[in-house]
Amino acid sequence: MPQIAVADAANLPIRSVVMADLPTLLALYRHLNTEDPILEPGLAESRLAEILAHPGMTIFAAFNGEKAVSSVTQIVVPNLTRGGAPYALIENVVTHADYRRRGLAGTVIRTAFASAWERNCYKVMLLTGSKNPATLRFYANCGFKQDKTGFHIRRPA
Image (tube, rainbow, N blue to C red; front, side, top):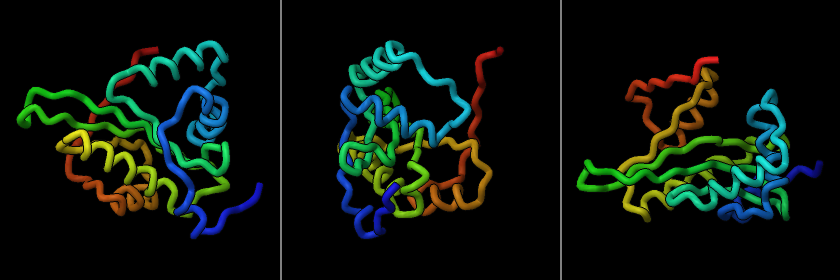
């Protein structure tokens, strides 16, 4: 796998994914949760079609040629508080292992921030299950503040 220089990483194009990006996006997601089952192709196509059609939902990705090498999913949620200003959620932050530590994830996250601010969001939220100090530092360096308490619940087995 050819390595890219740090300067080149900053210049990779970032855009919203389209249906044709599904194979490279699924390959990238293997770097996020290696233990996840591989989706059946029809289900994967159906899910991406739902995402692409869902108002306020965008997957931003950095591409090296046709290969997605870093991505983030953003959901903009309409709101009845804060003067009606929506808020955004960020999920599925991932960078291909061969492209890490080159600034790509931060650039993709900042792209999501810019999109949220353009949509008049008053905040962007992210939860991480990582306890790795480097990961937590990374999110802090992106501008996130760790000053709230997050809770989640998972569907019972």
